[in-house]
Image 1 (cartoon, helix red, strand yellow):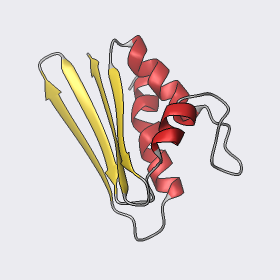
Image 2 (tube, helix red, strand yellow):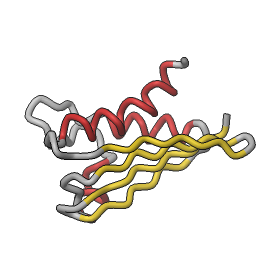
Image 3 (tube, rainbow, N blue to C red):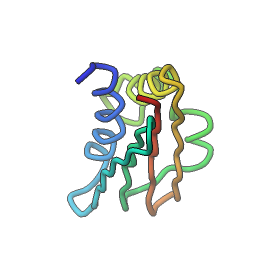
Image 4 (cartoon, rainbow, N blue to C red):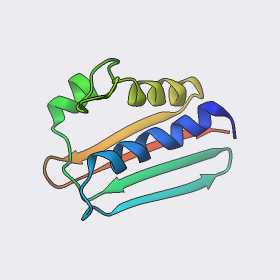
Length: 105
């Protein structure tokens, strides 16, 4: 698998795994519609505020992790957009969130 495509799958999924408690349920789904492929990563974890999504999530060098570099989601978004794709985040603070990525093959 291409390194860029691996990153598109790895980053949203690993973010959910490293930030959640053992009680969190993570769902990963993929679909294909013609020339387009979509990846959706959802969980019932802590969610994110609209302000965090707008001001920090996709900006480089901003991390909520103690040892994080803050480049993972920035890199993932850059790769998705380089493939004429889109990335969407739907989240409720303290409840859940969903990352959806779609791009042309």
